[in-house]
Image (cartoon, rainbow, N blue to C red; front, side, top):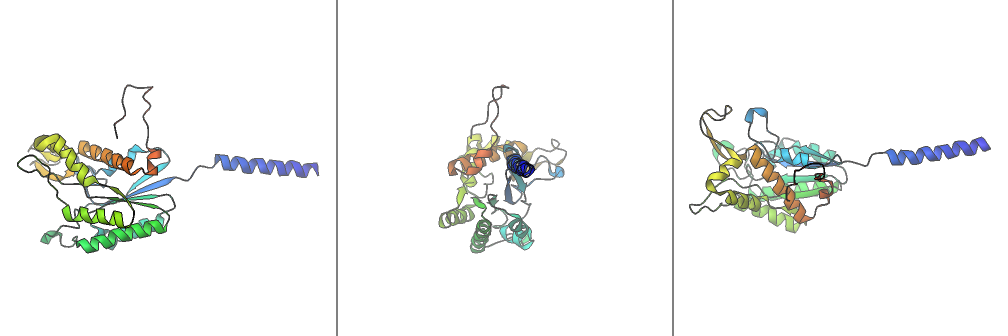
Length: 264
């Protein structure tokens, strides 16, 4: 009988230890969107999507899975089965940050395969939200980040008026957290001004960047510096929305170094 009690007690201890030693469930943050979000190939350097620096802002509790892809609209992201794979993998507590619009609104003939009407864009966003919530995960809407475009007076102009409005309306109607990257990015560009805001983008003179030897004036895609600042704006918008995800943002240890943490 004593042996039985000893074995039983040992089993209880082992069970309790297993609970203590087991790792808490990790959270995956899925990023879906276009080239302004995605991880860019080295061949496109210095072009960087904001999802790249965003991924390193979290501790080991969070994995950022950047599934954004250049040239994709909500329609083609679904049509290529990219969304369906994410929806199948979602688990309770995960997040989906969704930023589309650049390609949905592209009406030019060469981009006609990407174009999505505002009404279909709305339906696709609602689908992302509904299927995310069905897995007890958290949808987060992000307005499309603005392109660099200034008025003669130096005011950053809206470049996604119709589609950003749809995102805002869907956020209200479906009670989804909204990160207004459209507005915040324009405020950022204005703070730099028409000339210095070029530093945030893939803009260079001929002979400067070996990737673009003839020079380039790309006012849509970000430089590494620009992507980092955009990622910080995303975090700041998360703070405004009071997302629980902020609990796992890395806090720099200022006691052991002289670097001050960035202000969110």
